[in-house]
Structures are given as structure tokens and as C-alpha cells.
Amino acid sequence: MYFRTIKNITMKKVLLAVLLGISVGAYTQALKPTLKKGTVLTYAVVNDGQETPINISVDSITDNFVRFNWNMEGLGAGKWIVHKASLDKAERAYWDDLVPNQDVEIPDGQSIVIFSKAQWASYQKDKKLNFDQQTFTAKKATGDQIIKVNGKEIDAIYLESENGSTRLWIANYAKAPFLVKITGNTVGPDVELRAIK
Image (cartoon, rainbow, N blue to C red; front, side, top):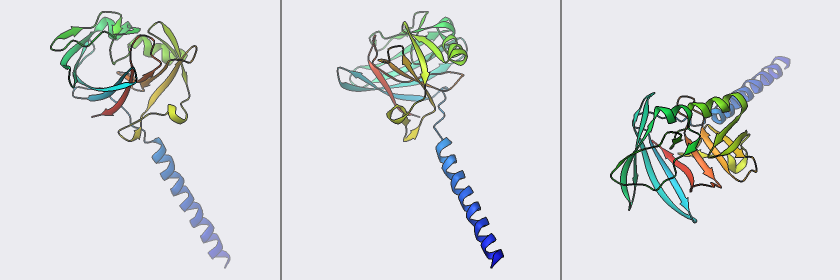
């Protein structure tokens, strides 16, 4: 009888450990986003309450430049080229109108989709970064601040502006951190990543 009780307790502990392992495993299996040649990001661009989907694909990605293809139904397609100076030090986003059938070179000091090495280094050092002339501080995401893409929680860094009115999510990917979502945007539309392929 004593050994049966010990056996039952041991089995219960093993079962509990297995269940906890499964729960922790499921919880930690957040989508780890990467940006590489061929990656397709589908965003919803929100202007005046209306959502418009845009597909952005990585055509080329190197240390010296990144070239994105974009396609928006009803408008057409085009390219953006982000050069090394922006990849290294940009702190502002490029929010100009889309220009179909052209290779638009993003001005130095600005970037699109991707965040600069300087911004990433600032986040790593101080848990803060500058973006569009605002300082954003990293916060712990809870509730609706946790973003899901492709049905899975995405491994993203959540940041708020100093007054909390603008919220920013960045893919936690050191090699090429990219925009997941922005709300309360003061200089352009709100944008939210909906799918990654």
C-alpha cells in the first residue's frame, strides 16, 4: 500500500511536470520573425478608419542596402531602396505617398519597414529609441498589446512614446528589426502587420 501511494505521487509529479513542460513550450513558441530575401510582409494601412492591405516583399537584403517590392491592389506596384547610411543611422520613417512603377530611393536619415542599427543599439543599451522625433520606451506587453500574426504570438518589442499616445511594436530580430505595428502615428498612417510568409 505504501509503495502504491509513493508510485501514485511519483506518477502525479511526472504528469504535472509533463503538463507544465507542454504549457511552457506552447507559451514560448512565439513566432520568431526574420527578414530575408523572399520574405513577404502583409500590412494593413489604416487611414481615416479605412484599412488597405499592402504586400511588401524583400527583394534584396545586404549590409549596404535593402530593396523592398511593394504591391497595393488598385494602386499598383513599386520598389523602395534603403541605403547603408539609413540602415546604420536612420531615426525617421519614410511616410511619402506610394509611387507605382518606380524604384524610390529612400533619403538618408529615413527608412521604411526596417529600423536602423543605431536605433537597435539604443534599445539594447537603454530600452529606448528615437523614432520620428519622439522617444519611445520599452514596456511589458499585456492583453491587447500582445500581437498575433499568422495565428501566433509574435516575438515583438512593445514601446510607447513619452506621453503614451503613440505605440510601436518592433520585431525582436537583431539582424534586421522591422515594423510590426504603429498606432497613434503623428506623421503617417497607422500600420499593422497581418501576415508573414
